[in-house]
Structure formats: structure tokens, C-alpha cells
Image (tube, helix red, strand yellow):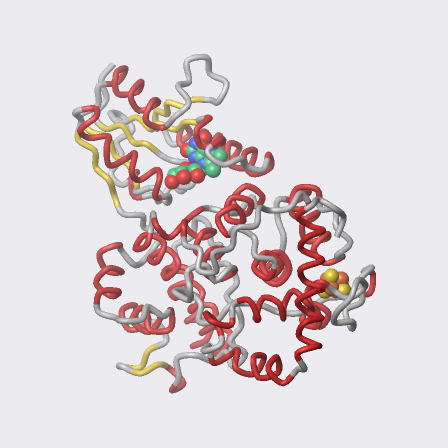
Length: 430
Ligand code: DLZ
Ligand code: SF4
């Protein structure tokens, strides 16, 4: 059997509007989808994540069949499954002798490297199409980034506002300012799966124009979509593969077992990790201010943490997870993505949650055995990294406080931190 086009659809491209399906001819074209061991094992994935992806893939394949499109679907347990995307394409090309292979650019750097080799490897034309779920192409991002010395999200966002004309009056932002979020909240991870970003933003803009939604909410939403989401993806592609190895603080401590067991006396961390293990999900505060914050303060290896997040969270795809962990959460990129590290002591966690009430540690105590570890780890972290961090404006005040303390007081923080970290390194309960 000979098909005209072989359309390869990956597990993160399950949309009927995916660009690889544009112009698909049900009479002549064949879709290839495969469950491969390589994807499930290059990092360990949470079982729920794999189930979620395979189940979504199988449903999508059924929908394509209903539309009359032929699908070559390879299941994980098919006896001749070669275990990799490249191996499965080889088998499909041999069986179907397509005139060309069509694929939407993969979301992951590693997979893109494979895709770029296919044409010469198999001697068949490979048509790699843009991913229409993003507004900003790689070329556009590159040309924006080449024209700027500091790649801050805010300037990228303004570029995108002008370019999409969303919430714009001529050349000015509607309402006279770009940003209505006075709190400057940490960005929530935008997760819009299979929807068209521009349509979504236009709908939000319409809600504002019709008076059914306030400007600050609509602007915040649009910033998440055309700002953060596009920016994070653009930065991922611009700085991969070296971005994954960034380690600004040279942090090298392996993740302690408690990341897999949830067993710790720290109520907030225990709950964040247990929730993650059980549900393959944790909310934003838990990810950033509890797990991420702890990892940074304790000097855990950022790459190991990245692998843990990718493994643990069902909704983690590398292009969004990696910049969020290496950049936003760990500041391991030295401030390329975020202007300041998200470090906080126990009092912040206490204000944002009610974990502290049920905790063995006392959030009001600063040093000593019963003190909340986030308190002394926070000061010890600032002290260890004063060389890298003391010039950051947002940290001027904490560093001034640190300098005002007596040397004796500062030593108590240092001692509490090193005693705690030693216990943790030895595998003792903390
Ligand atoms: C995450 C994942 C896993 C675990 N398995 C597969 C798979 O077997 N087949 C597949 O097409 N996609 C899988 N995915 C989603 C991949 O991360 C995603 O398809 C690639 O990274 C493409 O960039
Ligand atoms: Fe977490 Fe410290 Fe509060 Fe315990 S006291 S829950 S360790 S912030």
C-alpha cells in the first residue's frame, strides 16, 4: 500500500486543528500515532501522566477514524513496536512508502533533534509545520530577542500586544497602562491545552468591551496567554539545550528521599509532596513557594529538581516546565527569566496557607531545633549567596536586615541551617 502523505501526530498535539492535519486527504493520507517506550522512560513519568496521555491519544485516534481518516496506531504492547518515534517512522515508511511525511514541530528540543534527522535518514521529504497553538514563531521570537539587550517578559509582552492589537488604541494600551496588576503576582502556569490562543484572547477582550469583565482581569489574562506562555516557549527554544544545565548557584545537593516518600516533619512540604505523588498535581503556591522554595534554599541540584517535576506532574511538558523550574523557581539561569529569586521564609508560607498550625516546627522560632526550617534556611541562603544576590533591588531590604543582626545572631542561623542540612544529607528524618 502506498499513501501520499504520512502525518505523524505526537501525544502533545491532539487537536483536530493541528497544523499537520491541514489539507489532509482521507482518501490518500495516513496518520501515524505511536505509544513508545522511549518517551515513557527518558525520564520516569508518573503513571497517571502516562495513562492520561495514552488515553487521550487513543480517543483522538478514534475521532480521526470517525472522520474517515486512516490511522496507523501503534500501541505500547504491540509486539513489533520498536520503542521510539524514529523506529516507528522507519517501519511506517517501509510499509506505506509515502511521498512525504508531515509533522507539526514537536514541543520538545530532544524530539526536534530527531525530527530534523528524518529527511536524510529516510530519504523522504519531511514537511515540518509550525505549531499553530502559539502566535509567535521561532523566527519572530529570535528577531525580537536579537533586538533587545535584556530579554524581559514585559517588553516581549508589549511587542505582542502591538502585534496582535489586543487591548490597543492606536499605539497605546487601552486604559493608558500596560499592566494593571499592582501586586505583580508570580505567573500562574498558563495551561490552555488545545485552544486557539488568539481566539481566547479576543473573547476576553470582547468581554471587556461589552462591559462584562473588568479591564485588570482581562489584561491579566491576556498577559498570561500572549505574554508569559509565548515568552516561556520562546526562551526555551532560544536557550536550549544549554538552558537545562544552568546552575547559577552551583547547587549540587541530591534530592532527599522525602521527595519520593513525602516523609518529613515539615507539614507544608509533606503535604505538597504527598499531594503531588498521589494526584500528579499540586497548585501553584505549593509548587513555587513550598517545593521550589525549599529546593532553592537547601541548595538542591536544579536539574534533578527539573526531572522530578517532569516526572511528578501530569501537566508538565518540558517547554513550559523547564523554564519554570530552572528559571522562575530556582533562579538557576541567574535571572534570565525572573528578575529576582522567589525565596521566602516560613512567615510567608504561614500567611499564605494554614499548614503551620499542624506542624511540628514553630514558624515563629527563627533558630534551633524546633524552629521552622524555612526560617534559618532562608537567611543561610541569602548569606551563602550574598555575592550573587545582594545587588538585586528587591533583596536590598533583607540584606540590610541581615547586616544589622549581631554576628552571634547570624552564626545561630548558619549553625541551625548546617545542622539541618547535615541531618537531611544523612537521611535522618527532618
Ligand atoms: C509524555 C509522553 C509520553 C510519556 N509518551 C508518549 C508517547 O508514547 N507517544 C507520544 O506521541 N507522545 C508521548 N508523550 C508526549 C511527548 O512528550 C510528546 O509527544 C513529545 O515530547 C513531542 O514533542
Ligand atoms: Fe512549613 Fe515552617 Fe509552617 Fe512547618 S512551620 S508548615 S515547615 S512553614
